[in-house]
Length: 112
Image (cartoon, rainbow, N blue to C red; front, side, top):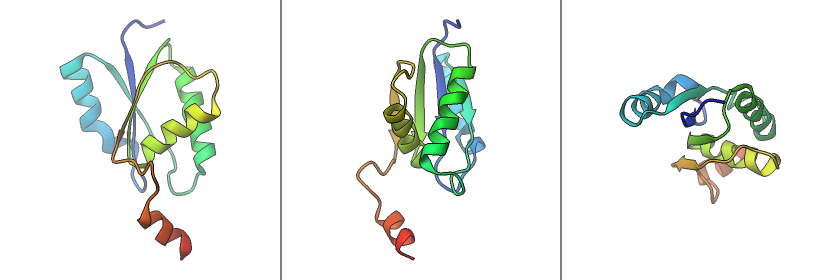
């Protein structure tokens, strides 16, 4: 197993993994983390499908602990993965602007 802490960076809705590149680079250069970008189909894929894909991605890494930084929907996705996976690796989750108590914009779009 790799002894360097790994951080997975998750993008938000209507975005792509490369949108988290600056955060990834800063985590690596300034804090010495091994940072990885995870990209998922935020518009097409369901939350549970994307959470399962995230879990598979994490299991494919050579790590014994993982931290997650999720922007917007990325934070919600990380929490869903933990809710669905009883044996998820230990670590921390940082949610940046995630709609953890709901979203009026999402409610509006859903009603259309």
